[in-house]
View 1 (cartoon, rainbow, N blue to C red):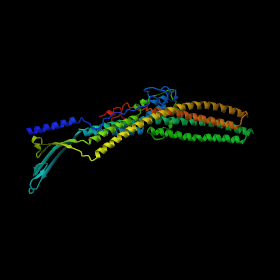
View 2: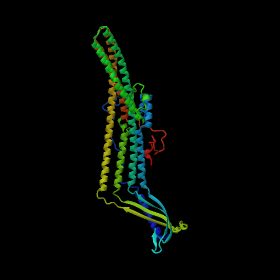
View 3: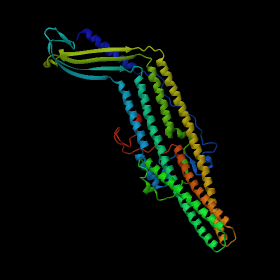
View 4: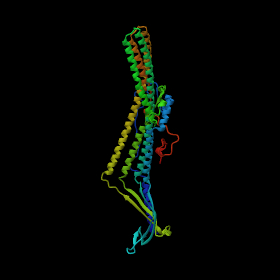
Length: 508
């Protein structure tokens, strides 16, 4: 190798080395997590008595990963387990994670050279009257041409355009993971809420049927007294009207029961009637536990998936500012090729058959406003992400505060309704006794029965509201997303229902 070749080789190595050193530079802002202030307690109350509700206890890090277990309802536990395995919305969220991972691979590929290999064979026979033909740099009149080689192009990431893109893609993956967790939190709460509604509708049917039976007995007694001439036909008509009115409520509840079962079936990824046989037998409304642990407001920033997703969106938009800023700076590239070419296959591997070329290049942008406008766009998107993050925090604080107030006040209402049911039951018993002795009119009996039925129905609705408000509280606290599959399927396998999410944000 002569001195000129050595010199050119040395210059090339020096140029590449210099560009590699420069490639440690990344333009654009570096991401810093936003600092957000949240209240120390839930409203003006002390941590020991939030919302004046003695059943709620505030601790630093409550265990809410499987909050539905606090209802002690095996059927609810089973439904939730199956929903996590087969819900289609959850499956869709998992596919979006796979998509984000694949998009990161596309972005990362720009760090490496683009290489293409090729090989060809040509056999020619030319007219002797047209002279020499040139093909591939070799003079051929008649004969064969063998060629093989590769070419490569590499844009060196000097100013961090690609690396900022990878940062954005990593943040996108993390945001999709948090989105999947948010879907999971919503799914768990929907299954629990719908199940609670189902059991409350079934309980309302039981109460309506019990009252209907008592009212039917009163109607039979009234007819007997009417036949004996002790009461007028007006009392019979009133008793019949009350029986029919109570009976008319049952089909409404049965409709609600059927639609609740249909909704649960769909949440489990099944056809609407799949759970009819399993859920049609009535069971009690899942009761709330005696004490409910909740976290401090500061824990929401770490627990709520929607807040975590909003924070990752800020990171992604910040990184894309760097991607846009890098367009202001020159781009350095290396293009080259190497190969073999010969007219005789026996000489294909000879050193004299080698060909090669190398072409360093630089592209300097001349901006007429497009690049800087794109930077302004990315900055605006970052500010939107910050505002969304702040709004998400405020919304989450409101949801928890609202759920605490509703949960505490509904418990008080339930206590009053329970006492009212006891009093109305005594009133019905006394009215029946007095009516049979002729000491009171029939209207008093009807009113006592009507009041009893109304308060019993309201008590069922209150029990439903207490349990549903507790579900809403756990959802507002962001509980339940910690569930992960113990044995995830191979990443990217089509049709998988579950994937390992714990390593997604760090995957390279």
